[in-house]
Image 1 (cartoon, rainbow, N blue to C red):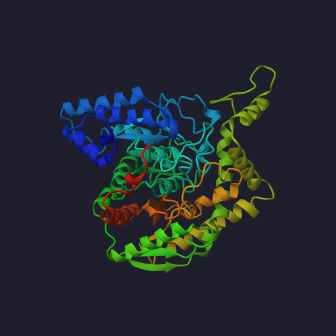
Image 2: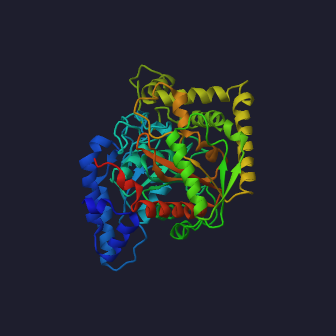
Image 3: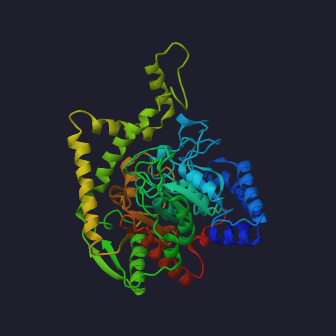
Length: 497
């Protein structure tokens, strides 16, 4: 079992295609791993054992019939519990959807199934994807496999923890302000936020519609590229979906190089609040890129300093609108429906019982920002800042091919450390938020361990919209250099559970 669970997704797919391993063997090995360690990690909210084994058997039957298998056929995957899955629960980490069984699959779910990827189950997350630590889940926090007393990032901490704990070789996350990249950074894994509109949002429960983006999570750059190619592409069911070919991400991941590329370093992505070890590893990464043939260009993007403030007006405003649909009348939990309360009272009681503190906080912030007399001062001003940030990215990409930065200002912090300080929690997404506001593509990959705490540090790579392949080209080159330096992938240093 230990040998199977440490294989990459690409290696697993090759061994299944050749008959060296069966999909059932691979699935059983990962289910056994989940059973052995998830009581400690709490990466999963629901494990679909029977469904996963049925999918695995179908892959083995296809191979026996001589049918051609896709590049990820039979590979297990952990799916963030924000994507609808027909026949198994989707809670979005909230009590308000506890026990809800969707009658349909999200487009991402359907594409995974069509590619014969084996879905192991649904992973833990901050409620409605609102958080930076997975402590806001109504079902309890997830631990970081590097140190179970630390957070695994958020909102997709369950997906990142499942990868780092070798419970799955692949996972799916969503990124509204950094919720794929930030968990990847603090768990020593790879996470990619595709260009906004590059992956369908149909069936992905909405938090902030102009920011939300699903994307791939893995332990290697190539595995992330293979998964990216499976889930990306135009979807007529999503009006924001881009009707254009998917960038050649797999080819880029197989041919990583930065020779002759111009790499930007933004002045605003360092300074007060950045952990010394994070800055040290980032500076080493910049020197590494230079040694691989990249030209380093200093950039000044002053509007980036306003990104956090703009985000925490735009995202709550959109969330207050999106979450209005959870009224206790149509689906999910219903409280107070005993014949003595009006429909309005039932809605109020349901929301009081069903939504957690962080969700309520953001709904109130958003409702206030959109209210009469304050719309222009708050929401309108935030949208103007968003335009400035987008314009600064456009000017920057006239000078450089990609931008690099630390993914997070610090390594993983202790569970509970920032629970009573929302502003400190929000600062975890300082480096990731500008990309969401602009709609660009971005990746986080491991760049070493911080010397002061021996915890993973993430390197963020940002590319222009629809140039996602540049992420994989640069990421693969950096990853290969690290592997050559240390002789093995960084993730293998994670402590066993």
